[in-house]
Image 1: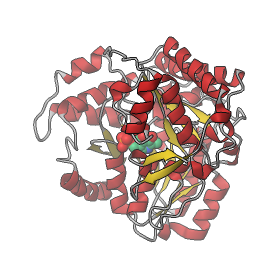
Image 2: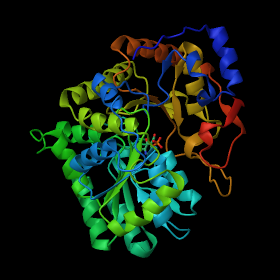
Image 3: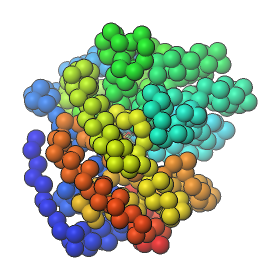
Length: 445
Ligand SMILES: Cc1ncc(COP(=O)(O)O)c(C=O)c1O
């Protein structure tokens, strides 16, 4: 797919971002020059995936495309039960609907926005337990996505299996800088969960990138094929949620897996109510075909080497210019550290939002705040607090942009860095109760 890039002037962008209430999510995509808002559903599909789509079987029940999809998921993920959904958050909602109640606590290395919101929507508590190494954004510790095992054991001892319906680990850790989780950490979480009789689920959106980091960074896995590393990771878990919009190159799709057939039966009843029949979920047969092809392609080690190196290219150039960025390079995005970039802006004046707005004004680059706007409000009380980090995520769509696009981004970030002292904070004018970052409206503070 080739898309035209429309160029805009600074004056036009000033008007456009004001009309979008200073929220990049509300900009028309056509008015964006380089779109790094998300890597979700924005990847380029291959000729093989497009070809498979032409063969989509759109039968309501038992379509051929469903069997291609189910068998591929089973082969890579290894779980007995596969439930297709229209995207990751639908899988989360179905899973939590059968497991979470207002007494529940669900630990994770770091919940992403939709996981946290789906748990909180059901009255449960979403607890983040990132490893201590994750606090030092500059160090090169290879597995900053790990969950803090000591804190997890403490929480399990305090709350017990009655109040912890499941333990989750997100690979890679999106809200924590796209950092990977090691196999050793996954193995230990599995042990803790099994000893306590608690199911262990993996939020698997970027499983291939995580598996490849294990191959490249964890001793003992250098010679293991990445697909086998993926199978080993999932072998320690009882189930997973997946957004096929990430590590499957698909524009839409997701699934929920479990080994518990009784649980799957209850989940399918909700699926039929909210998504569709169990052999298509919320998807067309052609979507199931594209995902089946994408799941195999994403495990190509040449592609994965290129993917990880292309993110590292941007991170290392920023570090050379002393621009604060989360290190080491993660799997799908570059994360600017907005708190160190704009130390004169208090977290409750949203330095990440200001920086995202400035990147758009400077060069038409769209990015996403991952900080106090996304995670700083209690949806039930409305109280605000600074989030653990204030980051700006430059998510890189898969197989879309070239090195020269990235050089353009580097130049723009560096120009904003040079005039950082003049950048002002922001205030929220209007925001919804849940997932406020998507539609909140802002103005300068
Ligand atoms: C780690 C993680 N979990 C879950 C989701 C939700 O997936 P979806 O957008 O397909 O609903 C996302 C999406 O960005 C994610 O990054």
